[in-house]
Length: 246
Image (cartoon, rainbow, N blue to C red; front, side, top):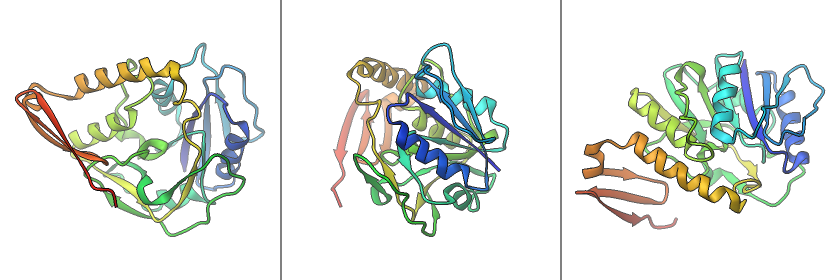
């Protein structure tokens, strides 16, 4: 059984309700925790759904921390509130998971359809898990993991870089991270992140994250592969080489 955690500002209730409908019929989903950062209150008639309304907007990463702390089951998923998944999506993913795996996220390069609205679920296809050496773009729209592999994100990192933090911490613990291949999902995107008021918060998140994970040695000499570029650091200077588009 799995706990699914969905922080939301309720920017698009129809999409959110459709997502919960999909999860509610999935037999492997034992619990759906809604973190209502809109503070408006949220109702959904199901024994699986539990709504937590904080005193203030917690933003994304502290909401994930709270949800994982409250989760009843050993396997946990973190979902965006603006996606549509296929029938029995969670059952398909967790059937491939083993306890030694780190974070399992989404392969947006080949299997995500970004759209402005949607009324139906993606067709169900065969899922495979592929080990990753870097984080894909939009990796964090749907992530799975065993609860004991979760390292809480520093609460100062509010809105972005939470997925990168989780991946990095698993690598530090010698855990391999994976991406989901073969299965399409639909993603509206930018329901909340497009808000210009969030830009200063995201900028601050980037600084705090880099400081938290980068050692003095890394600042002098390091090499990183990202979904869109290679990054080199030499004597404190950073160089980027963009990847060719497919």
